[in-house]
Image 1 (cartoon, rainbow, N blue to C red):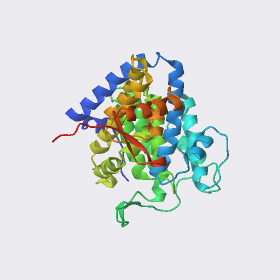
Image 2: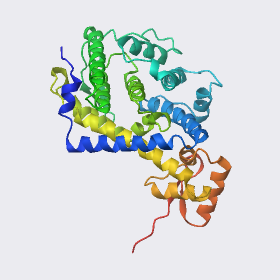
Image 3: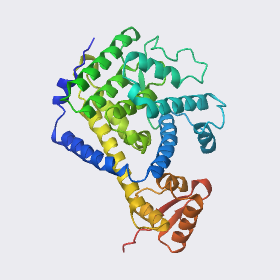
Image 4: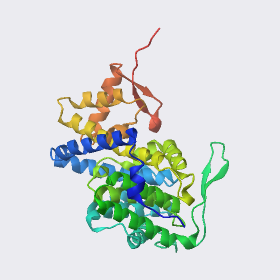
Length: 352
């Protein structure tokens, strides 16, 4: 059975690219610490929006979804789950809230991992909740034409409890070491957890929840305001490519952590930069309409009204609708599609 030494492994990760990512994140965290004091009310709104986005995105990655109205009602605890999908969404909501509110009191230990998994499935009748897998499993990928193939064969079920204990110990030792960047340790731990695939179901969602838990416990609380899970969903293909790139040789300990580590660092940096953008819009002198225009104009992909409201949570629905109508009438933006599929994009200059 393979062993884990995150202190030694981290030394080989300090390439120019990884070091640049770490430096940029550390600088962004410094700005974030100052900006987080600016508008407490606005940060509360960002937190509420991020919880909805995180719960929705992390479940959507696994093919679990419900309507927007049902999602919002579940997050706000105004309704109870109607089906299996909603039961699992409610479980993610609960675990995410516990991590957001109590991360300082939730250590990364095997027992805690089991407890979080139990709570993830607490609204379901499933008997495997809070228990490591009882049979061997495989990680399967599906191509665009529907063909399925085995991407990775995780360790046997019998080895799972010891392996989870080993990565928790390796994480704890590296963090206590004090000389290894916590972000590298977190990324390696999360990747190894994913490779062990310790549960019958819920491994992907647990990996993302543990990512947040580890980040928060080490002072990187950006996921409270900007959804890390949504950023992963937006880059899902790259996410799977990074996992695949770091998987080869994992069972004998010869794998390269760099593809996944650099991917996750990129996601964290993107979250800090998105936070900078949102706070900059809030504290700048632009009016509501110009903020809507600025958001649409700097995005390469068309945005729905819901996207705009999520990115500018302090602006009311009525104000956003008025701004979109005015910007469209003045030909600054174009309207794509109709009904619920409507999207808005900047009107680009045409070239002969």
